[in-house]
Image (cartoon, rainbow, N blue to C red; front, side, top):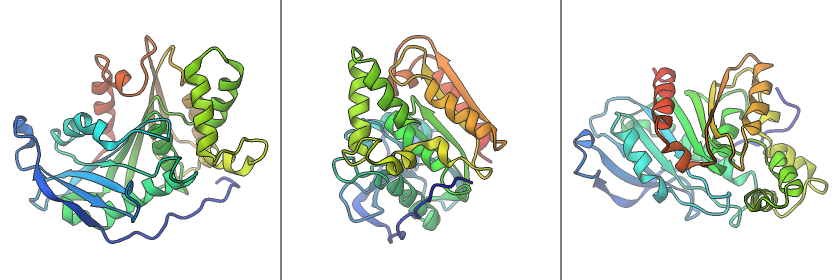
Length: 288
C-alpha cells in the first residue's frame, strides 16, 4: 500500500449509445457478426468509447485500448487498425477516448479510464463481455494511463494484466530528462506535456500532483502482472518501466520489460516485425 491518497473514480453513469450500431469491416471474415457501438461513459464529449463486440450473449475476454498523444492530443480513431486486430482474435474490444490535459488536469485521465472500465463491467451483458477477464493496453501517454490503472488501489476486479507500449510511467523522469537533455526536442516536448498534465504546475510547486502521476508510487500486492515494450533509443527509455518493475518486484508482482532495436515509439514500435505477436501472446496467456 502507498501512503499517497487514491481518489475514487466518479460514479458510473448509465451508458448511452451516441451513434447507431454498425457492422465491422466486411473485408475481414474473422469479424463476421461483429458490430461496433459508440458509447458515452460520461457527459464530456471526450468520454466516449468504441466497442467492437458480438451479439450472441456469450462471455468473451476484453481488451481495453488507450491511445497516446502527449496527454494533450490523439484520438481513438487512430487505434482502429489495432482494435480490429484484437476483435478478429475473438475479444470484446473497448477503444476509449478520455479528457485531454487541455480539458482537465490530472487525475481526470485516470478517472476517465477507470470510469470506462467500470461502465463496461457494469453493462457487460450488452457487449458479450466477461467482466472478470480483461487486460488494458496503452500507447505512450496512454501507456501511462494503462499502468496507472494497473497500480490503482489494491487491484481492479477482473483485471488480468496491463501492457504499455513506450509507456511514460514516470512523468517525473520525463520532466528531469527534458530539462537536462535540452537538444532532444522530443524529450523537451514530453517535459512540457507532463507539466501541462499537472495543471501547468511544476514539481517544486505541486509535489502531491506529481507524486500522484508517478505510477510506481501506487504499487501494491494486489496489482497484476505487466508487460512493457520500449525501443533501445527512443525518447521514452526503458528506464521508465524498469523503475516500475523494481517497485512491483518488492510486492511480489511480476513485470516483463522488452527492448527492441532502433528508436521507434508507440504505435510504430508496435508495428515492428514480431512486436505485436509478442504482445498478443502475452495477453493470451493472461486471459482465462
